[in-house]
Amino acid sequence: MKNKTKTQKNKLAKYIQKGGVNLAIPIQTLTYNLSWASQENKLLGSEEDFVRRCNYLKRNCYKEALNKIEELHNEINFDVIGIQEVADPDLVTEIRKRTGLQGWYRGATWNSEARAYSGCAIFWNTGLLGTMASSKTINLAQPDDDGKCDARTCCIINTTMDINLIVAHFPWLNNKDDVSNISKIITMHISSNGPIIILADTNDSQTLISQENPLKIKNKELSHGLMKQEAKTILKSCCWHESTHEKYKHLADTGDYILSENVENIRIPIIRPTNYKTDKRLYSDHMPVIATVILKVPKLSTRRIYASKFRTIYDKFKTPKSRKWVTVV
Image 1: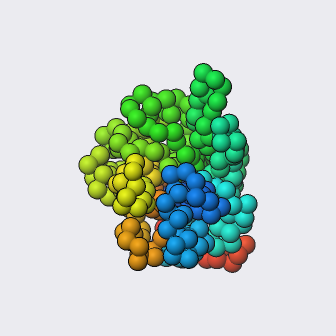
Image 2: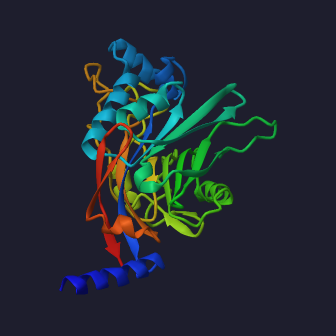
C-alpha cells in the first residue's frame, strides 16, 4: 500500500512539473492612502481639515496609522500591502519593521505645478510571491497644453513567480473614457501575462469600476469583486472631512480598491470615524481597505505542493507565516 501511494505521488509530481496542476493561493492584501499632508503635518490640500483636527486632538494620526497597520497585520498576516501618498523618508523602514515583509519597492513621480514628488510603496511576502524580477515607475497623469503635469504614481513589480504587483494613485475617474485610458497606459507597461493584483487609490467617486464594469488589463478583467451598488455601500473609504467642508462630504465616496480577477471579502477593517470633535479614532483621511485575492498560479515546484496543506515560512524577522495551498486540476 505504501509503495502504491509513493508511485501515485511520483506520477502526480511529474504531471505537476509539466504544468498540469494549478494552485489556488489566497493572498491577504491591504491598500491604504496615508495622506502626505498628515505625514508632514501640513495644513494643505484636500486633507487640510483632517490635519487640523488631528492637531486639535493632539494626536499624531500618521503614527497611529502605522500602529494600526501593525495591529491589522498581526491579526490578518498580509501578503501584500500597497501605500499611496508616500512622503515620510522612513515609511518603508517602519512598515517592514512592523510587518516583517521582505519584498518592497518605492517609487515617485514629479508634480510640476506643486514642484514636489508624490510617491507610492508596495510590500510583499517573497516566500509566497517570489522576489523582484523587474520593476518600473510610471505616471498615469498626462501633461496639459502648457506642459504641466500632475503626479499620479504607478509602481509595477513583476516577481520571480511571474506575478504582477501594482500600487497606484489614479487621476480622477470622471467617465468610462478615463477608465479606458488607465487600462491602456498600464497595459502598455506590463510585458508579463502573469496574474495581476492592483492596490490603488483610484479616485473613483462614481464607482465606475465594478464587477459588471471591470478594469481590463492584458485581457484580464480586474475588479474588487462587488457590484456597483454593493461597492457604494461597503467601500465608502474617502474621505474624512469636517461637517462644514465647502466641497466634500464626509466618507461618502468609493475609490480605494484592491483589483484582481478573483477578489473575495473586500472590506474596511476598522470602525469608520465620525467627524465629531470628540472622536479620536483618526488615522488617515482615507480608510484602509483589505481583501483576499485568489491567485491561480501554474507550474509551481513539487516541494511547495507536498510540504503539506499548511506551509510555514520564516522571514528574517523570524516571523512564522502559514499558508493553505489548494490544488486545482
